[in-house]
Image (cartoon, rainbow, N blue to C red; front, side):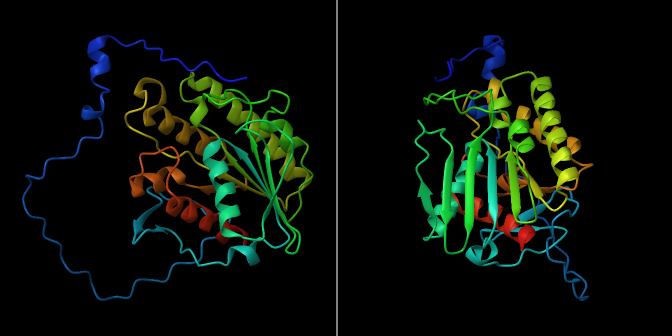
Length: 288
């Protein structure tokens, strides 16, 4: 199958003109007075603790300096990816923004080999293994809605709640979930219902296997000129708030890709490798 993705609008012509690229994300004119920056006091800035799983996120959660993400509440240590992932089973679940992680892992670990699962299309499940280091990484798409022009097979479509319910889990199992981009054109209750179902499944998983690590990757911001009525970051921001609110009572990690992609100014649903690297670095700090 593939989705019928035609433009549908409920706006008048005048209303639509407000969403033209020239009217969205407009830079503030630089005609303000000079800004005077006073010196900081000479007290040493307290050393921040290393970022760990379960830490509460601040608002905003960090900033970018020299192409590196710097969280407000903790510090990220440089971690050797291959050693960190030794003996780990990483299950990536969700949309193509988390599939980017799979592609990054494969390009960064040269001993990671793809396994042909004999499935069809770009949305097919992906599996990569390193037999020497006992690393197993797989990506699986979420269930409907799936929006795009690419062909996919309906035989292997599953809702994430069912996938999580089938997962035994243990201390070396890491589940990363990313939901949002394909839900933007639909009423918010569709997303809320899905997020609640995933929440219940994660709750059941953590009851039977408390050592399993579950991480929620927030949405990326996306382009400002691609069907703003249906896909704009207005919808994404509401979903970002929903997902944080729904999962706040569970012992899960949050990777704030929303704040990160804003700070990087990517305006691209699939940000460049440097952004993906920084997202994965948070994961590695949680694991190791």
